[in-house]
Amino acid sequence: MHSEVEYNPSSWETVNCPFCNHSAFKVYERFGHKLQFTYNKCKSCSLIYTSPRPTYNQEFIDRAYATYYQFTEGLQLDNFTYVHTSSIPMFKSELDNLLNFDKEQSAVLDVGSGMGTFLYVAKNHYPICIGLDVSKKMGEFIEKNLGIKIFIEQFDQFQSPNKFSLIHMSHVIEHVPNPNEWIAKAKELLTKNGVLVVNVPHKFS
Image (cartoon, rainbow, N blue to C red; front, side):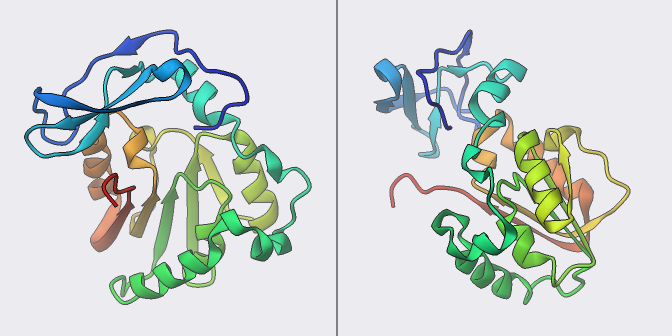
């Protein structure tokens, strides 16, 4: 979450573990402005999750994500190589491995496309490349520099005429309220032998 001023959510919700739905937990860590956010550790599966958390509505999405990556103003496609945060070498290495599993390589969907760096790497291997993001600014940046269509909408609401042999989510699913619904959505959009890749942070690493 990027913020230039302190963020105070307008409403909060208390939830069970989003993975196993267990209600028992112990407080793992408090963080953020005035320590208003709480990481809990599920006593059943040990997942670290946030509760209470800001209510997941459009106000929260716009405030927390939709205006991120403001530094892209004036950045050109060739600059990607020199932007450390773009992680192009990491995505190149990741994709080289993924191509061993995605034999079809018909279409790729990048959920939470950010700067478009994964799509930048993938576009030479897939005839159809599509991205999803909540930031209009980032969508415009990718479409201008890569010529790849970016849909500004939530993944669980996304409707596509294409099936994808690869769906990629890097550090995205931990930000959504119902990750199991997103996994089910991915299954709907994958080809028969399609590959779903989900990268998430490891709190204990």
